[in-house]
Image 1 (spheres, rainbow, N blue to C red):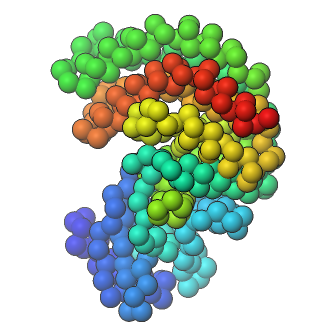
Image 2: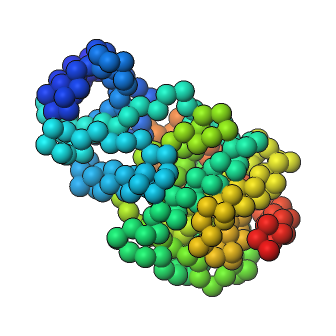
Length: 345
């Protein structure tokens, strides 16, 4: 279906099922798997409309929206969900299924990296998020083996599989060649990675988390967090992993090589003030978990084989940044941990 008919269907769904009379509907920021729209009603209020592709697990999407609402109830800045006239969070008509949330104006994603007061703001927001979700009815926090958070054995198997596929079909020039070479390097480095991860606590705290707290899903306005968006359905994962994923985003680490350790300390301090319930040993583990997770991840090295169409210049740049950032994190890991020890005393 072309964009123009989709816009007309969205306008019809808003009027019929949401009692929103749109004055204008336009295509919005691109989503990973969804087509997004921005609608403005006759009173000038704007709405963000997410249209799901056919085959989407709509029950999972409802659970994700509910998780966001639970975080919002806990004081996290999450856009409010607009319900249909029958109280549903997702509506379907004309071949489209959509959800509608309030539009967050004047904000930018965290893809430009963290600096200044943003370190504190993001640390505080994630701390509040985790404190709220730790009480989620799906289940309380529980210990999980550190080896499951950074799974070296699984990484070895996956890298072996990739290299076997490339042995049968040599990679073409370009990003695939770099990915092939990097996969070999990663596999050779795994014994050293495993030795470094031995210094993690035997267990880390797993709880209900956002699930996809990456830079595109964190909206900033100046030095404040404007919104946390695009939750996944509730599931238990390491709180330290999720905090490290956002505050030690590869683009932040590489763009601010002389600042990220101090920034990490500020973020962890703000997190702890907002969520004193997470153990200090989890917070001290944040940079080691972040480095280990990057070292054990095959994304996006696997994309030239698994999904060649997804290999864009932006993905190539991100893949190279992830690899380089892992090296920076390992190189300055002990320094970062010593700074965190001072914060956590």
